[in-house]
Length: 370
Image 1 (cartoon, helix red, strand yellow):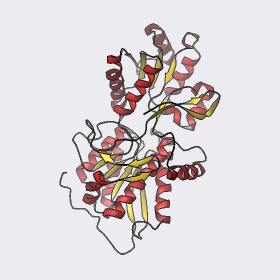
Image 2: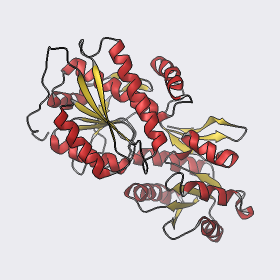
Image 3: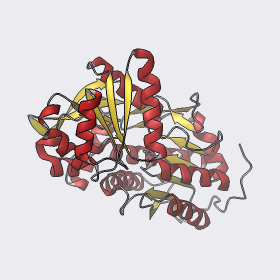
């Protein structure tokens, strides 16, 4: 582990709070709805920790910074939170933003538990300062590729925008599908209109279209255009990055947004803790909680256990990742080194492929699981 600068966080007996910094996208162009669910989970867990006595009698405090999906803004937030003396960082949803935050946290010697971002390479070099709850993109998207093959789809078109995250997803799909007889056709959404996408799908005889694009633009117009094209009535529309998870998708697309498979990181059954948390999150959000809200809750649950056991010293927190075993909302959380992943990883995080039921759009159907 790299030698960090001296930590400003030391054990105190004056009753002051223990602070965790939270990175959350709460403004455009960030995915605001995902950020709201992530924050709801983080905040609920902090409340539960404090109601149970806090961290050895000291209140746990969440210091929230809005990243707005901007990597540079996230880096500035990490630096500010480090100066403020937080014991650790939590959160973030957008992978490119989390990568920037993780790289800076590693350089500063600030422990960071990433909640939701999946990009495999969160840091360029292996680090002990960063751990992650969400499964790496390579695992989740390979599960999605297996689902496509099992459903009879081997000619897959991807409508993609320029991005490290989307390019990584395309590469994972191609590398996994090609040895199994699958073909990935790339459609550059910086050059194509939704109508042109429909023509390309017909020309390439694709049986599935994956949306590797932002939401609501251009994802929603693409879905509407494909659904209305009589040549494409049999095509599967998929969204591995999870755009249909949130209520805004259903509100904007109604029936057109059903039967669009996406990745979700929940088990078939929540733990007893998870069932209780689900009820509380539903009340807090006014809607069904997404998997992102559970990731937020689990993040604070893990950090609270670390703080109780090892105190608020940053180096001791970072050294604790491989020794943890914490019961979360979705199973027991333990971190290990995973081949090709530079951070401590929860290797057994659940992965599902689900969609919205056309007969009952508010109900999610499990189509495939790993």
